[in-house]
Image (cartoon, rainbow, N blue to C red; front, side, top):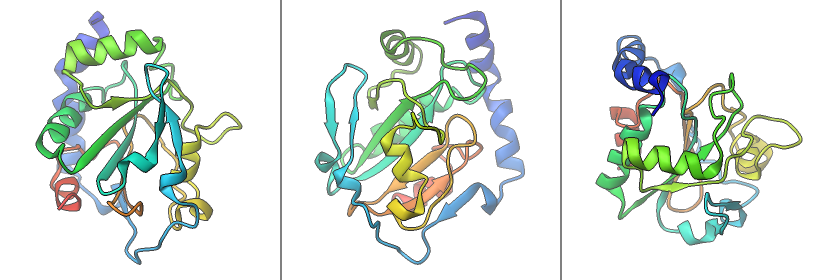
Length: 195
């Protein structure tokens, strides 16, 4: 862990204080009309950190929390909270981290270094994908193209605005929630959505 990463880890509670003090529903979007996705979630595939193919069909029957991540961000402490959430709900929840370098060069490492950093510093055992692009460009990862396009997911056009945005898909493949970076993975709003 670099000095910068150590400092960010130490100051993470301060970074998250804003979200706790100024908690707002604008940080959360919900599929209140229960719109079913025109393009099935289970038709998606992604490449895992180790290079293997991940078929989303294997997630049928579980909730899936998808997060765009970065190792050099003020929100990097959410790796630890995501791991806690995963350990508490791993019988019914899949957590998937998608490392990306889309915001101010905060994920410069390669896939092996990212996995090592996450495991050593935050005990991450949930699924990490290959480093990718999560914002709208011609290189955008197909999973994030689905998550941020209402013509595919049925209702949500919210692309990631920073690292550690979270998207929740239910057991039937319906995108149910978007949680902003300021919403902790252990926030009551996330825990309630998992019930």
